[in-house]
Structure formats: structure tokens, C-alpha cells
Length: 516
Image 1: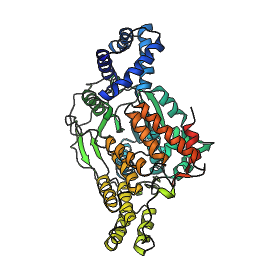
Image 2: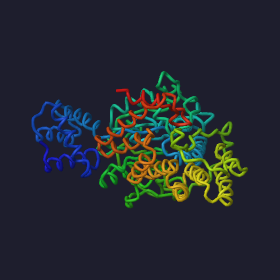
Image 3: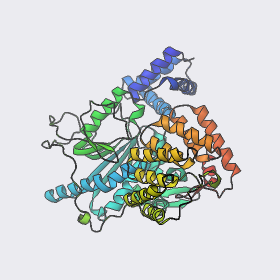
Image 4: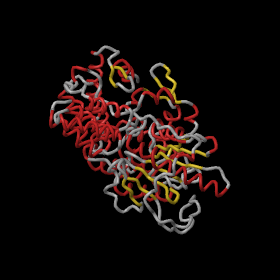
């Protein structure tokens, strides 16, 4: 029904409206989705369905029965095109950068401005393409910890997404244990109420975040009505990798004008390396590249909804944050999860080193558990000076660097561990997460496949492969991997731990997968 010519035409229309890049390997799956929607809409030919979709793109401001039908169909199609996968505190390095440096710097600046103007301090943050809400809620938890006088602030955290179903999920604040797979269990205890196998976010955190539907490519912003202007921080992560270059540049320009002077944009690792023409000033931190709006003088009123432009300020590297005595009490850090070994299925873990009881090794483990990662690294290095084939010392150093956001060093020490024991599962598992955090999905997939070969009864490896295949549009392989995971989980006692920090068990995970 949908020949190559029609596939190309629909791909171009989808890219024009949403920015989504349909790759050659995605075209077969796109055909299936288009056929399903064509039949569901009651139309009989690709040309009729194309005309229906084009109507909403060509007439964005028209309000009549036909264009409304086109917009409804776009919403239904987008729900099938966009994969909504997220979890709390995704990319610990970037969240640690936000918690320890960027947000304290912004908060001090906003306090000073408010004091000079005799006004209440205001902070505006936008989580663009927020999926089911884990990212903006994670930001809200960080601010909850940083601001002891939060009631005196005007805190505005906005989450937007193109998928209505994801936004409905986000507004409910209702999550499964799978959304906490990179988070310390104390986050669940502090901010969520458990109801059966679900976790309901506490109302005080939910009230800090508002959600709206927004198409980053076709909708205009800055937008006063959506409060998307004069922003202090925008997070748009794991989105640009699905956009064509034209859409990337278009969205970056709109982000630039939506930020206040000095405001920050954070994308996922390596997403914007090919976008050298945007106007942001790039700043390199150990945990991430950050993009800042500064040193630009624009004519006033260039875009509707723009806030007045202050005199330009020269962009400089952020100063060290003012000592946190500005707060009523020092903020306690959000307890981000330490990188853990793979699921606890002991017979598949590498044999521990015989030197695990030596004093330096005990010291290294103690510092790591206390989140003193630099000290843990130094102690583990002393272990390696005496025992250069100590696999777990290499792995501990890799985890410590990962938690510091220094991913390349973490990758190096994983590879060093594998030089000693090429069959060790734990370094492979950490390596897969590191590649994913860096945006290198292909290498992450290769490593996960090797884990499945080395430890064929590890359910989480199959599930993570299933997620990657879904992102790639390969639903057949995704279903196969998920089916394998379900079969494995059913063979394990329900109490078998899958994740030591979140206390996720085989029974919990199986119950989640069996939900419709």
C-alpha cells in the first residue's frame, strides 16, 4: 500500500511537522504504523491520509472541523512514532553538576536581583520533551533539597511534551519501580508513597511542576501564555538525536530566545557536536558540556512574547558558587544512586578478588559508600599498585569516575578491568550504561549483546536491549528480548534481587511487565 515514494513523502511531512528523522532502517516500521492509522481513520488510500495530515501542517492557525480532525490524527500518529522512555535522575553526572554548581550559582544570582528590586526571587526552569515527567520532578527534588526557604520563592518548573498520553502520566505522578532503576532507595522513601507495586509522588513535589503539550518544531516560542520566556534553565536531553539538522537549528534558535541572558541549556552528551552554528556559548565541565546565552544584543520585540532585553553581558566561565551560608541551613545532597553491579544473580557475577579484605580495599569501599569518590579512587589505586590484576578495584574506580560525571575515565577503567578478566559481567554492564550516557547507543547495544552471551540468564540486560530496539523502531526484536526476560523472570524465585539499591525483585519486575 505504501510504496517507496509514499514513504519518502510521509517521512518529509513528519520531519517538517515534528523534526523527527526517519532513517532507512525505520521505514518498514513506519509503513506498518501508517497502515494502522489509515485503517483506523476510515480512509482508503495513502493519498487521502496524506492530505488529512498535510491539512494540519499547512494551516496551523485555521480552526474548522477538517483541520481539527487533522490535528487529532497527528496526536494519534505521534503517540506511535515517539518512544517515551525516562527514569528519575537520568545521567547522574549532569544532575550532580546542577546540584553542586549550576543551580546554586543561579539561585544566588536570583536572590541578589530580587533583593535589589525588593521583590520575591523567581526561578524558571523548562524540561522540554519531558516524557512521563521524571526529569522535571527530579529537578523539583533537587530544588527541594537546595532551598530551605523555598516558600519565599516563586519556583516555576514547566514540563512539555508532544505526547498527550505521556503528559497525562506525568500529571498523575504515578510510577513503577522501573522508573527508579538509577536511583537510591532513599529517594523513594522520602518523596513517594508506595501503593502496591506503584509509587505515588508526594503532593508538595507535584505542585512545583506544571505540564503542557508543545511541539518543539512547529509551535512558536518564546510564549508568554505558556510561560516559556526569560527562562533560567532549559533541559532538552535525548531529543536532538531524533531530529534532522534543520529541526535542530530551528529549535536551538527558539531555545536561545526563550532563555534570559546568562540562562543555560543542557542537552544529552554529544547530541549537539554536529551543530556548530548555534549561537550559544559552550562551557565544558567534567560532567557535561553546558550551553549559555550571553554576549548578544538583540533588537527589542523581535519575537512575540519576548521579555525586555537587558544590556548585554560578556559571557564568562561561571564563578565558583557563593558559599551556601546564604541558605538557612546547608542543603543536603539529593541521594543519587551509586552505580551498582549488575542484578544480584550470584552464579553469574565474576569471582571476587582474593584481596578484598586488605586494608586499602576496605578503605576504598568505605569511601565509595560515603560518596567520597576521589578518596575512593586514591585508595583503590593503592590497591592496584600492590595487586595490578584486582578486577574489582578497577571496577570501583570506574564507578567512582562515572558518579563524578567523568565518563571517559570511567570507560578506560572498565576496559582495564576487562583486560584482566574479559568474561567479567560487571564491567560490561557498567560499560553499556556509560556508552548510553554518552549517547553512543550502538556501542551500548553491542555490549549488552555480549552480556546476554556471557550471562544468558540476566533479565535486565534483555530488557535494556528491548528498550534500545524500540528506540530504533525494531519492535520485533524488542518483543523477542522482552519475551526472553519474562521467561527468565518466571524461572527465578520472586524474591531474587534485580537491583541492590532499589530493592527491585524478580517478582516486582515480572508484575510490571505483565501490566497492560
